[in-house]
Image (cartoon, rainbow, N blue to C red):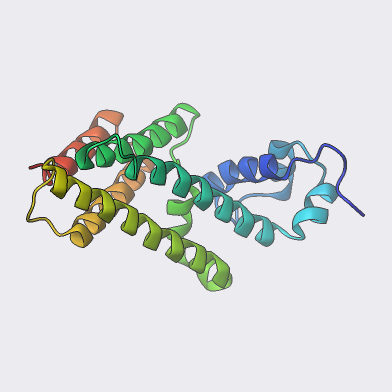
Length: 200
């Protein structure tokens, strides 16, 4: 049986991402997913087969959106290397502050999934999706660092690889501290210190 007319698969995935990022795989119920997506249980499972499959597809969707948004700022030719990194941190901070304003602090399904290693052990595709995103993210950040070294906005002696690892660490730290209730001013401070350490 085909999907009902009007079934928007992307909208269902986006609604599912918001639930999975807060509750995780185990604690997100089918009823919550159906209500958030505005679909019937039969329609949900006709398309996605199982909650596990919906989780994998939702994570893949979350990764695709993050890669697109982060890639856009990290490769923007109109921005200096330093400005590209500042724009990346602004994206992350906006996500966490928006999540906080919605009544919770979990702005990223990717980070939440990374901090639940049992999911990757249960479903190898999850680990592959997360690892591929990390590789892409590190590569994009390293490219921005190289651009900053060339345009003089970032230190010439900084290693693009080490800098990208530090920035990803700072991003994960911001995510975790946001969930722990750290005020936005504190999160902004972490981003500023990270950028200042690379500034020329």
